[in-house]
Image (cartoon, rainbow, N blue to C red):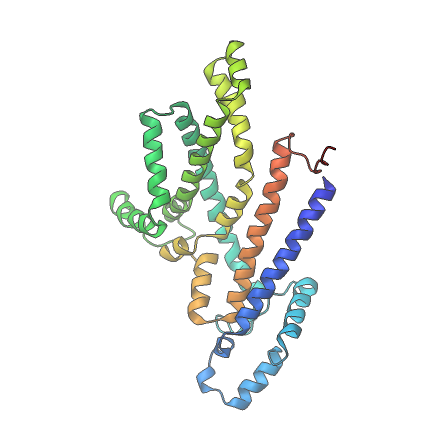
Length: 314
């Protein structure tokens, strides 16, 4: 297991380095205005001197090496020059990440509480009214662009239930709509795949044997079928968990939530190259970490999955 984890970590580090290098080089192709809050009022001499201070006058490979060295040795992701002049990126992110994590954790818990029973109910009533109703819900969520139903939720939920339009961290009522909006895609995802896996499991021989032994339908469904069907779904839980914790760009912007999603939109508008670079790298890191944890989690949930590849028989 340790060897497997080491290999996965090594591959992930290489993948992350490739992503960082690509993003870094692309951001260096952007106009230099993104490094100066008052570019229009600066002379060429001032711009040149500032670029030298920031180390942007050096070749790109040297800049990349210095950036990676600062990340490893100092934990620094650079300095913001436009969003907040001369403020470290990590200091800005430290005020934004916790809120996105809170929203993501609550949204994911709600999605699990609704999505897993939904998938189980659909599998139990395959082909019946409840199954068709659940499928209609999943198709709507998957087919309709999320921006559309997010907007409808905001408009009609505020009108019907008197919920606030804007988010305030101190008011619990303002958390309801963002959490519900963030949870909807995961609810449909968990419901759809759990139903599929449970239907597949219910046709296997061990289920037939359990029926012959006289086990009740509920016992077979929850003690055996659900348990085995949850294993492949569990592989993707860390990824959805981390991605949800990072926050939805549209939802956070829609409800004026001062989290990671709204921050990315803001820094893109302001052309703060350092901030955009750091946030994109953070999102990439989160996705890679989710894949690693998902692979490890699947091997822990299912003892049939081996960490060691079997040699071909001769």
